[in-house]
Figure 1 (cartoon, protein in one colour):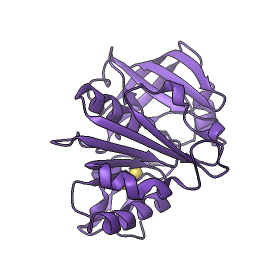
Figure 2 (figure 1 turned 90 degrees about the vertical axis):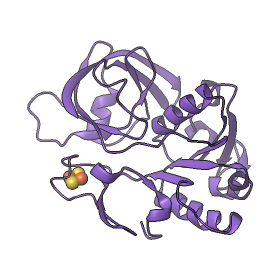
Figure 3 (figure 1 turned 180 degrees about the vertical axis):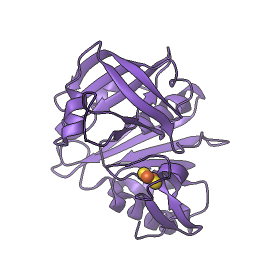
Figure 4 (figure 1 turned 30 degrees about the vertical axis):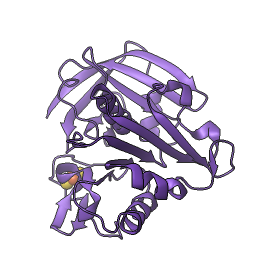
Length: 260
Ligand code: FES
């Protein structure tokens, strides 16, 4: 973990509600594991605001990739307003990311939220190992989902939208019974209710939730320190109290209580 600077070298709109930022980060790109985070100073030098956690994914050539949506949070809005050539002050990588799939064939990536870079990082790794990948995304309507045309053709894409404008009409968790039969390991980002459904349905479909099957990224909107000093991110688990910034933000969900 170190404080360093990264430079925005590309910024493109990939859909009406999605931006893709590419940053050169020679000190970080080969060390950052999908699911780990950086604390970025989202303001000019003298600011009272806390750094914001961002979850980029490595994309080769010493670069990091970050997908963002317009956000009412002033810090994230500041970040999205950066232009090519701007330099960002970051601390990281912090926390523990998603483990690489070991001796798995079928990889399920699932989200009902907008923090997708950790899943897309896992996707790239799995494809490089010739593994089968399904990405299941849920949202209120098609326009809110990550754009399908940005995905490699080797990935099977499944969608669920509340208004039925793309894929299944309903929640992405409605797709779980079939997907959980197929998957050898699941990586998830999103809401607490998604993690809760994943655990309940895994126990139903696979007759139990075993270790090393279901991983989720748990992260509060802010990590005041990011290094285990402030205790603001404590989490009760089967193995006792954990700190999300040090022991997570990726957890094996078999070790997390249903209320988390
Ligand atoms: S953010 Fe301070 S202890 Fe985790």
